[in-house]
Length: 308
Image 1 (cartoon, rainbow, N blue to C red):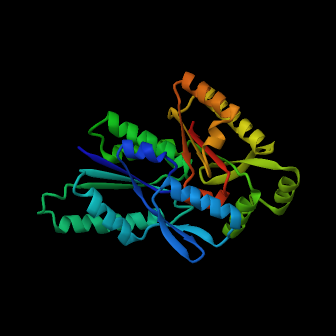
Image 2 (tube, rainbow, N blue to C red):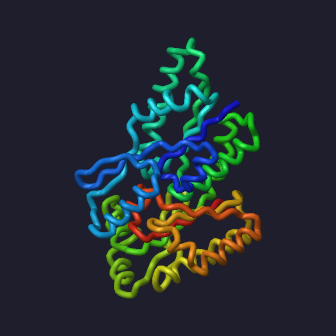
Image 3 (cartoon, rainbow, N blue to C red):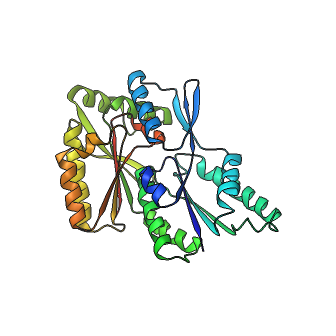
């Protein structure tokens, strides 16, 4: 039984990992002023976006989920002919309408497939859509585990896979260290969130204090800080080491950076974390942060996630 694993472009899995493991990517729309385009997690395009975004500090930039028709067409054209079942993992429904659109698209696509069931080229018989209830690197942790389960258990049913991932999703920790507090404050204000107020912004800007922000089970809170970005990142990596010591439910840690990832991988604190994780049998993945994530936290920001 062939299973298609599908993630959206907001999922911060390394692009080469997706290609090597046959993980499909649903594009996300990006609107920047009068410019509109689809984000397929092309690294060069994403880096170019961050370069422009940092220069103009635009607030009229946002991401959009693909439409119902786009998702439905993707399923019928690229999935139905080659797979027996499909599993779509969506960005948290609290942050995007993607899950809602995917549910409608799935019904539309499966009806279309049933209408032409006489065509033996359409093999897809089962489609499962999951609200991961997490974002970005958190999605990546769950997608990594989904791919691993599919690889190990060749005949795993999509419902079984869903039940396993549903339990794991409650234990996903997603941390963010922003570099320029302007972006995270502006986006919080646009969403009507009070987690990053004027006082925090003024103190952070005046004294170069970078917060460590945690998102877990849909709730966002500040859990630490550092004097400058490098110190905050180092403290975050120490928190990740402690989580590894306590035991992870998925042996993977996902990092994404809204810029050139070499700025992170050259840090002594990263090398220390990577070596520590490898000694404990935990894989560390590093990717360019998705455009959808970077819009909210700005260029030069780090996201880290694990399950535990």
